Image (cartoon, rainbow, N blue to C red; front, side):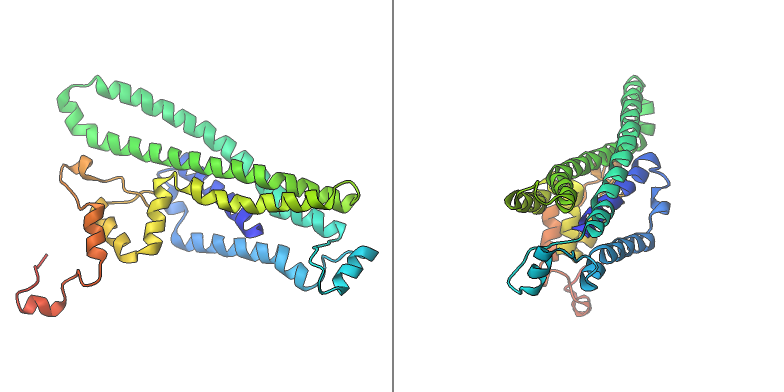
Length: 282
């Protein structure tokens, strides 16, 4: 859970740089930096959750908790007040504050960018045909880049909103429970905990809204297909999606069906086929 929340926080910061500094984004976030960030997320998660549990730092000293620890059949996760508050702040409240601040700032910038694009497109349509042919492709690519970033931002905003609605009640109850355990019934605590877990079931439905995430899943499932589509669709933007397609250059490109056929086993010619005249030199 902690790693999932921290990852959402990192994604929010990533979207912040993608929207506010789109032309510097590629240099700001390289693959090496991304690996370091992912490593930091898992290290923080391990230090927050795994280490305290293994070292028994989370354990409470009241009679009910001690009886539960001694009973192998007891699965209740009873914690002391210090651990419950500290883990809730690190795992949820601090990332939530960062995400709310970052997304609020990003939405302000995104709104201004969309207004500029609309004004720019209005001026663009008033130009003559010759000017449109000279500058149209670059303008369309720039507009498509921002619009794709904004669509991905909207999807991530829905993810964050769903995540907040699912997990916020539990983390509120989690702190109240350790301060005064008689206020919150046990079944309510368990129900809200499962509500947080159900959030994971919503994520695939939300992710499917974004072509960027669908494209990334295709990359993970078929690497050769990914490589072919990279050449078929042209250059990629910060999300790995193409901003260079047949509309921009006037030439038809390979379709998804063609890429699928090429991914099938045996579709690629072997080196010896060229020696016997069976292959085609590209």
